[in-house]
Length: 231
Length: 276
Image (tube, rainbow over all chains, first blue to last red; front, top):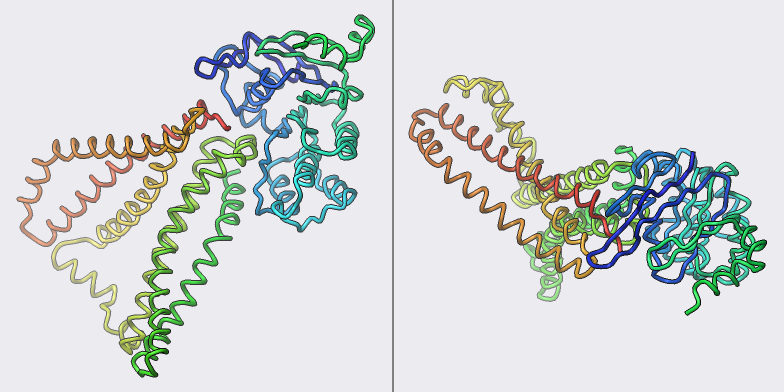
């Protein structure tokens, strides 16, 4: 069964059509790039999958379920916002995740924090922006979820951290799970992707494998993206 | 999961409320000491200093009261409607659990603040008037005496207990209503993409207007009934029953209004959540 399925999914904000008639299926065991220019509807699609927005039309299913408390237990979500309470320390946040998510692997989170030299007792507000992003990602990737939804996970970090984050994603995700990475920094994530979904102005342009793009178009995903989304 | 939400909510709010409570206790001790010192008149400068401590005590009591309301509003706003909402609304919990956890914790802090303030005021009065607490207790009528007095006017013990319970219930529902009034206004205001805070204020005023209109309408409808009941009062027992009837009416109105606000809050969080 598809871990994520959109059937005629549309989302409208007043007069703005953010997504229109999206039909797609994501199978487990794949790393998928959700790619598109700014304002194409990537974040809206991810928010719909998390139940943070309600569809205007159509439906979105997570492992066959409409977004709700059951689906949230199997989805691990990284927002593009800094969303952790800044008065909490990394240790308190691990307590929090351990309390709410049965699939949270604390030992793994502690190991990653140690590896990155992040003090567990330090509060979020005392950390640099980059360190905060690392803590968010460590918490999200320390879950054994069925679906990981990562919205701009490498947006604001330096190239060395970017490599570590991608490596973390690949090393840590449950092989029977799917990972959806939304970004416009394609060259950086291309190496880890199995599939890509291109969206523009709320429309699904294409869903295909990275190998197909390379074989049929003779181009990298980055080159193909630039061609498709040429201004 | 409600228990876990409550645990984390108490942890988050306790960081602010416990130091405020500690400040109230410390200032109570200092204010009592200062009152004694002023009575001993140790010079103008010292009197001014002690006066300032006493003023700080009253300001602190006022601040503690305001803080419970500010905390209730701020926690809902920052935790559910701002960036932290991305964490809270993706937890495997229902919207009902999210709303109840905030309401329960806020009402507990309301009650705790109320009790603490009464306690420090009573202790201050006792200390300053040199009254011995044991003496006061000795003078209070025993439960047996109260029961006997009530039996004399035909009021059963169970009725007394029920009235106490109903008063407590009215206080709790009043606390829940206050929370829900703010929660509903904020949740409705944040369904829109722009001017979320301004719209929250507009909804707050609008809700106040509609509710006062509804409760006035209800009271107008019932006024004849209340009048008949009041006219029928010709003993202390009837008087007590009239008070209880009024209590019930108040409770019903507040419950109905709270239920409407609860539906507005949970529906707008569930269907209209629109985090920036």
